[in-house]
Length: 383
Image (cartoon, rainbow, N blue to C red; front, side):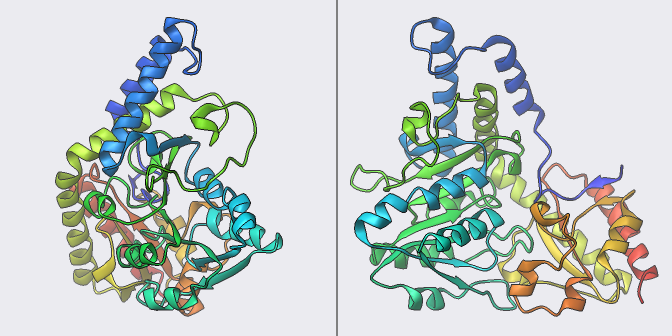
């Protein structure tokens, strides 16, 4: 199988998280919205405890936490859920970036068909969007700015701290997709100014199939986001449907673990990135990073191996390393990365690029051995 180095796609579940989920499945099988018996109360207690665990990690109030099926749904609720407010206020202008996850880009594309105006900003070669370029596009009728915290393909941190502070002054709704930063850039998220924030549990060693939408209160009122699906009044009507108690419990436990261990994990992640760079430099292989590493997280790197087709490299080295060449949601298309294209990277370099992403649980010796083998294969594939 080799070593797993595709954590930006999905991280391995923590055994402590799994233990909580198994216990919940076996012993707390009630519906959290059943009000007439103890089994429902038990399930509801588990859900509310998880809500507090999420809130504690993010430094917010638990009443601002809403459970969803993942970031894709959270992003859709954020954008589509503002439609009624947009029509009432005649604010139908949205600003986002060309490197957002498809759940944002495809949703704003759909909103454009409904009569909304959408401005999409490209990053530069550093991988970052320019704050002033976004602010220059803000208008009287701007409804929303949606920018991710960390890009899933490059690992580049976007200047959402500066942007959030500026948009707050202008009273513009701001959404942050924190899928790749939640549980890692904990202090940074706690200090961000935003109205809505989304993440998925499976990116921080939690279960797949559950995520969170944060709706931050202002003067005790939630942002004007409405439900986009119809059914019961679960999650205060924002997200109807029976709450998956075990998944929610797993999400909460993953957040608790992240809060307790993120500082220690940060050092582990950083040491692995140092190892990666040392191996690359010592190997003599011709390479460069995509994106300015001064702005990059310590858990990922997007690397161009000059003259090496990424597809050939991944197939030839898959017995050593599980890596990717883009977002999992677009990996079947085999088209050049839209993120790297938006950065202005030449197609030949895009086709020679792979994304490597690791976790704090990644074994350093295995990492060193298997990355070394992948690099040697890359050298043998140079055209």
